[in-house]
Image 1: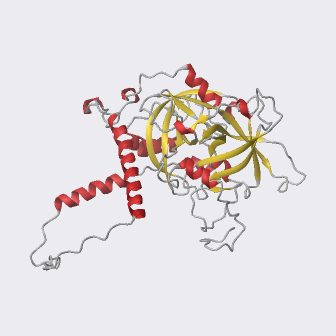
Image 2: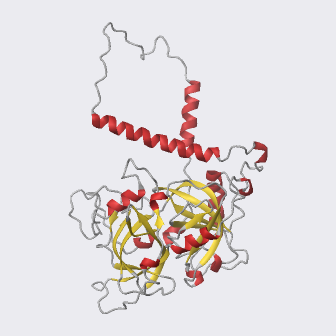
Image 3: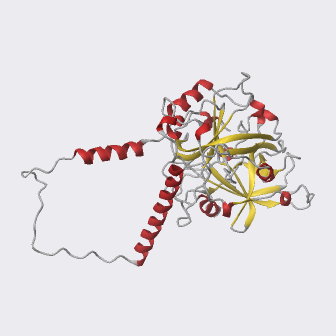
Length: 419
């Protein structure tokens, strides 16, 4: 992952605090004084009946209610998984041990191990010929990606947005408020997908790239064109896509997670790891936008066996129950058992430890000291009634919203001139 994703993060607990404060205010409220200016005015006229709502307003209210009911169910499902854990089972600091979580006795099947590897590909890049005239035109691997299928389109792949950010040249125009935009034209680089068996030979070219223009989250989607003439046994068509139309059930707290990636510290060779799903949290990213993430803990002995090490960004992980985490976004590391420094990045174990104690343990309610690395995955929201809030629908529509390059300064609505 790039440098900006190594900062310590902070959890968001304001909503809970606000809720508690509002309850306290309500409980302590005093009746109004008879001399108060806040007196009720009594009138003899009957109040006018409310104005009937239009069909459009009724539809919007129904959609809002459906979304709120879905969110309530999601929170209820998470809470229900902790039913049966008595207060006496909590540790002295009020945190659960991972061994006390509901999914602790689940096992990863050989099929899950196979499936998590079958969709994995390498994202490779090189400078566009018009940018690098006469220069090196060799491809270089940058991140892990996964082929997916969504609503009949299986020429798609997910990847972490920060893998593409550095050379995207996205401008600051606010003329287009859609949350995802297509950077294929503005980027200095061209991208392709490659298999691990031949990591520098493209098997599909990347034609469209949808991602958040302002780092509101780290989700990104690639639309690709398979390269014809490749060996059918090793081409893009030989890669099994993840079925995103079935990607809606929630993972189970404590269940094991199979990880498969190609990190730099392993020389881009496949690394398999087994983690534990620890829950969801809200964290601010470097752009100070709140990002909802899944947290998976692993305990590699050294950097080369760390399945969430640098350049593994974008890797999918699959839980024992079949949930796909899709896209590694960030990592948190407190050092390795053998004491080796990480050659692939500038991990600061003391900062990693502080972030865990101050933030993630409180947000998750789970002890994290048994994991040397926390793998932090971008959440893909499923809101079928609102395509702007549904991550996959938003990304698909983002292909139609061409990003404004940062050297354009006269687009109407620009909040800040481009660089």
